[in-house]
Structures are given as C-alpha cells and as structure tokens.
Image (tube, rainbow, N blue to C red; front, side, top):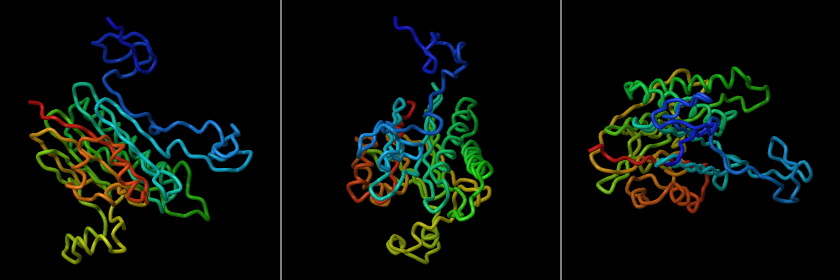
Length: 322
C-alpha cells in the first residue's frame, strides 16, 4: 500500500487527515501557487549564452531582454487546466489565472486581464486572482452561499489591487493610471455553478447539447448595444468596443460583480478566458468545435489568428452529480 505524503513538506499523512501535523497544510485544498504559476526561467541568454540575467530579465553581458517566466504558463490541477500566453504583439503577459479545488466540495477558478494602459497591470491581475480564489475556496470549505461568496471574492480583489498603490504609490512621470484589471470567475459544486464577472473577460458553457456565453461585457460598446444605439455588428468595429465601463482597480472604487447561477443537466466544460481569445472566437458555436481539446488548443487558435493580445484560457469540466 502506498504511503500518503503531504504535498508541501512530504511528511507521511493519513487518508482521514485534514491538516498535515508537520507543516500545518490543509490537505483538502489544492490551488495554483500564490503569485501565479510560471513557466521555466531562462537559464542563460538567448543571444550570447551568458548565465548572468538580472531581475528585470536583461542579460548583463549583451543587454538582450530575455523571455519572462510569465510569457507562457501552463498548469493542471486535477481535471482543471489553464494556459496563459503573452501572444505575438504584447511586450509582456499581463493576464493572470488562479484555480483550486476542495476535496469533496468543488472547484474555484479565476481569470483576470490586466488593463494595459494602467501601471503594474500584471501585478494587479495576479493580486486580484489570488485574493479571489482564496475567498472562493474558503466558501467551498464552509459551504457558504456561492453568490455572496462571489461578491466577497471581488471585494477581496479590489482590496488587493488597492494595496498595490498603498505599498508603492504611483511615481511622478509614470503612466499615472492606477493598477487595474478585469475579472471573471466560476465556483463549481456537484450540483450548481456560479459565475461572476467585472469587465470584459468572459465565461462560456460548452456542451454537446448546446453552448452559450454566460457573461455580458462591461464595455461602453456593449452598453450601447443593450440600449439599442448600436447593433452587435456595429459594436464590433466601434472604437469604443474595448473601453471598459466597469473594472477592478484602485481608481474604480468598490464594485460588485454581475452574478449568475446555473444547474446544468448535462456534462460539459466551463471556459474562462481573457479577450485575447474571444476577440477571435466570440460565438459559443465557434468555441464548441474545440470542446474535446485542452486549453492549449484554444490558445493556439488565437495565436494562429494573429495573437494581438495576451491569451488566457481555463477549462473546468462539469458533470451532474446524478
């Protein structure tokens, strides 16, 4: 019989243990690393081969900027998997993802897209994602109301992003726009799924029995469509198409997410993504054809189509309890 070990300190644990006696880790909860999963670090300069890479990812010998460990991130945790890619045009990856599960309780996943025009966008998105997923995992442990948990998760994200400015105020001469990001999240139990969002990152339900978009973009263009001022076709090409009407940021104040709860009756997959994907594949039917694939294929579709933005995809499978 195999001996069970703590995933943190590798001390022996029993199947019925909730916490590791050696290090105190909660054995029922597993999540992505705090600060976000990262790809392999660059061991030596891609141009001159020097091993001397500074903290800003520049070679101290030839000055060449090196690929960041955040440029391409892939992470799998049980049945949940995610990929985040810098894309082909952006200087860095300002998307972030965080997800985890509580044994016997459910799964929580978050995708945040840093607003490129703001300061420290990648820090804002990761801080927001980490703060939110912790709240949602605790809600699963406590069997708390999922819709209230989603509101609490966004409040925690707002506080985490605001703290970035408290810890490091904006510098004179900088871009001067407070750190900010979008937010989309899902909380999945054996019988229901709750989705919450702020901004234009999206959630989709993909199933062989029918797929649909679960979120509505918080953008000026989407608002004009809802008011009948623009058609959907006009909105796609309008210069305000990506101007956010709601976001998470130190300059946004307290915001509450839009929230929906579903009880799917058939197996399927919940897809969370940044606009780096849905800019190219916006319709549920366009995404359903990728249903058998992992997140790598969804990201590849966006890269092959141009990859003009950062691309993040998290897939959360769902099967009804009965």
